[in-house]
Length: 152
Image 1: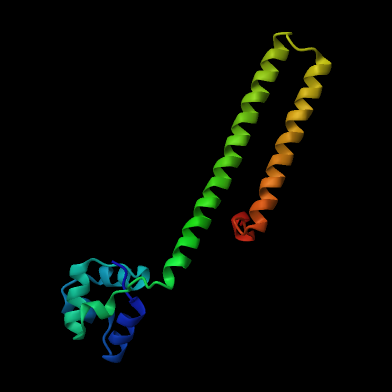
Image 2: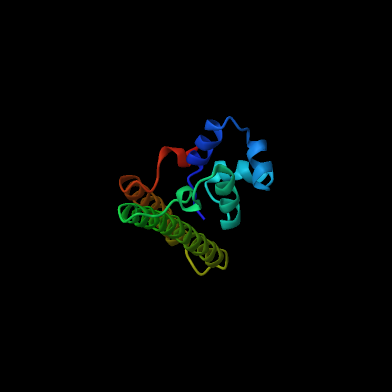
């Protein structure tokens, strides 16, 4: 379950308790409490144990998704899906063009394609790959699906 880790930490600090003290009183491991405060997720049993020690209702520690947050969550999931689709599409374009290159080179080695035709087709495929990747990259950048941190 999603919990308000900041609130738990605030309650803990108000009582001047360390993580170890709260964990021992709640009957959980210190690592569990550290993970809880870092990731804001915990099992229902863990939440109940901590709530009992802090003398608050367990529902006070949990985070409920309000109607206002639902559109933001949906937008985030949609953007994540669009980003995944962009990268899957780019990978597919690259794989298809690599296979086309391999077939082109194979047919040229077999003598089925003349040197001039081979050079023209090879250059056309190369240019098409560059154009598709650039256009997809620019569109992804404009839509916010690609950012500078993706290149670090």
